[in-house]
Amino acid sequence: MTDQTITACEQTRARLLEAAREVFSQCGFQGATVREICRRADANVAAVNYHFGSKDGLLAEALNFAQLKALQTENATADKCPEKRLRLFVHDFMLMLLDEKSASRQCRMMARELADPTPALDKIVTEAIAPLHEFLGRLVREIVGSKVSETECRRCVISVLGQCSFYYHSEPVLQRLTPELRYDRNEIEAIAGHIADFSLAALLAKRNG
Amino acid sequence: MTDQTITACEQTRARLLEAAREVFSQCGFQGATVREICRRADANVAAVNYHFGSKDGLLAEALNFAQLKALQTENATADKCPEKRLRLFVHDFMLMLLDEKSASRQCRMMARELADPTPALDKIVTEAIAPLHEFLGRLVREIVGSKVSETECRRCVISVLGQCSFYYHSEPVLQRLTPELRYDRNEIEAIAGHIADFSLAALLAKRNG
DNA sequence: CAAGATATCAAACGCTTGTTTGAAAGTAAA
DNA sequence: TTTACTTTCAAACAAGCGTTTGATATCTTG
Image (cartoon, rainbow over all chains, first blue to last red; front, side, top):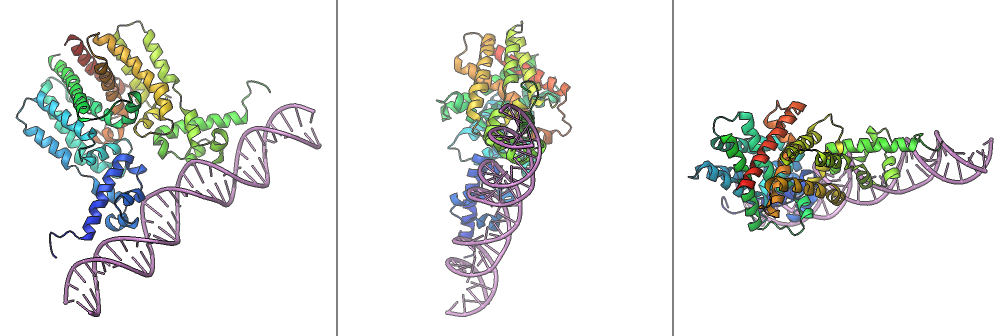
């Protein structure tokens, strides 16, 4: 019984992490309760503190930026022109944010925290968001050319991310505005297409203007 | 003592409402506590329930969409081409969202609620956000012409609002990304200019494409 | 198997939350 | 001034929170 067998302990840890990602991404850090996480993980209330020290510790371990990083490296190695890579990025990013079926609650969890800071925000920013902005900054730079200032370039990145995030952050509102709206795969891809069109038109205008 | 004299009761109510707008806009509905609101209003904890019935009731009364509506009517009556009116809207909207000195906590309060729904979200949507989307929808329509579909038009509105909101919602993140950032009036106007440029370029491309 | 370490559990702790209470203070009209 | 009503207040309430506890169960190992 040395390796490879999954101990009961590890099972509980894994269930807690999964439940935590679920609840954190749905309710935010403040809104999520340890009791609800433990209920969904079929674990005792004390389990969180036993395995992770505290609710903060659980959040820190539940955070996982692998998927977001993978999205960037895959995109960077794609053998395409920058316009197509931007289109691809927006597509993958929106699927990650909106597709229920995509198992990437990590990303949505992260998005929840952006608005109101938790102890983990610094880690999120340095490990995930800053690299993301730099990645997009390079991509935008490829598109607009060298005449555009760095500040302007950064604002373009924010314009792209702002459009994407809005669909996630304001879902409750958009749902009420157009009740028939469903984020199925077709809808998400249509939205991603719009954001890419919209952004590329603006960026190309900047390059030529 | 019939009119014009401000009773003690009315003074307390007014102080509570002002303090509530302050705290709600800073901490969100969940994060705000009745005790903190009462402390800032120099009132007893029981005052909220006495005057407004509950914390929910206080939120409902504290909400005030006058400023947001005024922004729309002023804009609509501006004797300008739709491009300039969009530019003007973005400018005024960003000032309302970001300028500390602008006394419009109502708008920021509202923005806080969008991400995680409170009992008041329905009221906010029907009374403030839906009209805002319709207003912007008409403005966008004037710019892109009649060839663009209604769905696409709506998505353009979201693209504009998404860019604006991002600076507000993600302030904690943007502050960490560029620590020297300060939302003074110059910076806000520069940002508003960028968003207007970016969006108009995309909209004009849609009209001509 | 027996002993020691590890993991789970029900229960409770201390704290904060929104809300309620009943008495005290303030106000207005007879 | 007296009477009736409104407003404030300190204190307490019940519920929920994250966390701790000490006993119990479950493994691992000699």
